[in-house]
Structures are given as structure tokens and as C-alpha cells.
Image: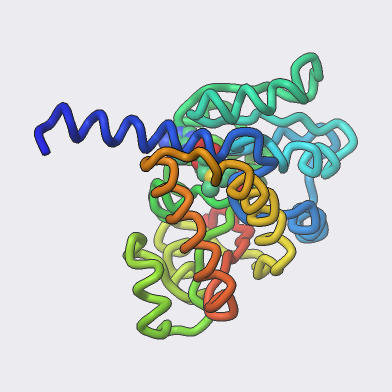
Length: 249
Ligand SMILES: C[S@@+](CC[C@H](N)C(=O)[O-])C[C@H]1O[C@@H](n2cnc3c(N)ncnc32)[C@H](O)[C@@H]1O
């Protein structure tokens, strides 16, 4: 395959991915109960400034606004399709500011940085080190991260996650948090219902698109089906760990 053909193939795969993910309520496992739990672990000021980094289509914005009476949320993502979706819901609400930006540079100063299922794009330690300058004094970061529940993981589960070589067990995540100069305040394993909140609508969308899909979309549908099948079969061996952390000095 020459460079042009490879670039065309990758662009049509990206388009097929966006077709599959159009109008899904969320882009990874998570549910309001996670944010309610977070609210019980921390004390936020009344007018808390919150940043939802890599917000996707914005499913977490409503629950984040509930964390404090005068809370406001800056929602950042680099994907215009997802931001368009959440703008349909939040445009005109003065509590929500939607920004097309890179997650490595959230800017601003926040009492809470929330990142559901995306810190791994930067690496946990790199993400925390980079976001530290965007924390107000006393501020905290909460992020969810893929995690092996068995440490070491079984060979098959290691293979399923071979695309993410840094993935570890809970102790490994705590170690990466420490290495970034942070301490862990609390952790929570995301429940099955958090995965169902993502995979349920995704499965519905997959069945709508099945008929009439071209080869590229069919391949994307196959990958999604394989991911869901892996979770159905081995989901008791891995999941997402939500960690609440603050600078240690
Ligand atoms: C697994 S999804 C999670 C989305 C959302 N937090 C949720 O739970 O529905 C990861 C998100 O990270 C965003 N993303 C990936 N790399 C990014 C970057 N460099 N800057 C901003 N957003 C990024 C993607 O567009 C996507 O919305």
C-alpha cells in the first residue's frame, strides 16, 4: 500500500468510526453514580470551577453541575462531532463553556478536573503532571483508567489489552499517581452498569448500521463487537478504576 492509499484507508476508517459513534450518549464506561460518589469524597467550594477534560458528547456535565450549587463546567474535547452533540444540549446555559481544545492544554484554573476514560491518551503520570498547573489551591483531579483486577492479569486479558502496554493493576495506577507528585484520596471500581451505559446504546447503533454497511464500516462494526464480546467474557478480570487524587506537596 503506498502512502496515499494508506492515508485514504485511514481517513475512511475514521469516518466509519464517527458514523458508528454519532449521537451516542457517551463514549466510554461511566454513570452518574460515579460522580455522586465523587461528591461524597471531596469538598468543593460553592462556586466550584470544574473542567471536564475529553468530555466526548458530554454525558457527565449534568452530574458534575450537581456537585456544588454554583458550579460551572468547562468542557474540552478535540472532536467537533462530539462537541456539536453536547452544544445541542448546553448552548445558552451560562454554567457550561464548551471548548474545542487539546486535553494536554486545558488552560484555566479549576477546583476539580474530571477526566473519564481518556487520561491514558497522555499516560497517567504525564496527564497529572501537565494538569497540575490548572488546579486551584486545594483542587483535585478525578480520572478513570483501564485496570486489571488480577495482578498479574491472565494471558488472554493481557492480550485483549495489548494495545495499551502501560495498563496495570490498582497498585500500578497508584504508583503512576505517586510518580507524578500526587496522592490518591479514594478509588472506586466502575460498576457493570457503567459499562452497560456505554455498550447498550452502542449495540443498538451497531444493529441499525449492520445492513447496508460497506467494507470499512463492517470492519469497524466487527472491532466493536469483538470489544464487547471480550468484556462479556472477561469483564470480571478488568475494568475501569476511578481515582481521586491531589498534589502531595
Ligand atoms: C473514551 S472517550 C471518553 C469521552 C467522555 N469522557 C465519556 O466518558 O463519554 C475519549 C475522549 O477523548 C477525546 N480525546 C482524545 N484525545 C484527545 C485530545 N488530545 N484532546 C482532547 N480530547 C481528546 C476523544 O475525542 C473522546 O471524546
